[in-house]
Amino acid sequence: MKMYLVMAMRKPVFNADAVVPHKAFLDGLAAEGRLHLTGGFSDGSGGAYVLKNVADLDEAKAIVARDPLVLMDSSELTVHEWNTR
Image (cartoon, rainbow, N blue to C red; front, side, top):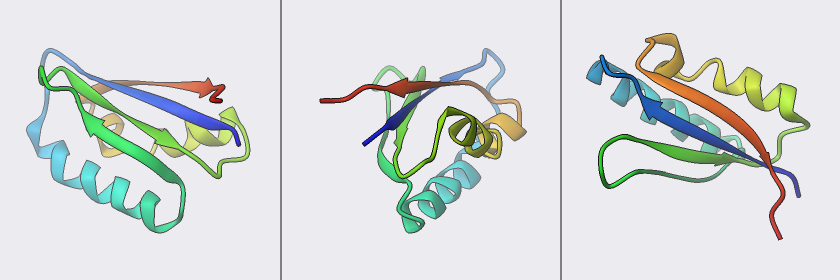
């Protein structure tokens, strides 16, 4: 199964108002069966989530583009196709 690792690193001017809608976004992905794992880094610098049941990297990037962290310009998100074993 292909998975996609999404790294979310907070920008220097982080908008904390993005946190609640971001969590709701992740809850929606989980309800769709597209979220494998998520969590924040203990140092507060950001976090990551893993997408599953996504057709390809382009679809993963399209999903991430709808994340409130992106829409509210709070974090820099990068998407990586992850070869797990």
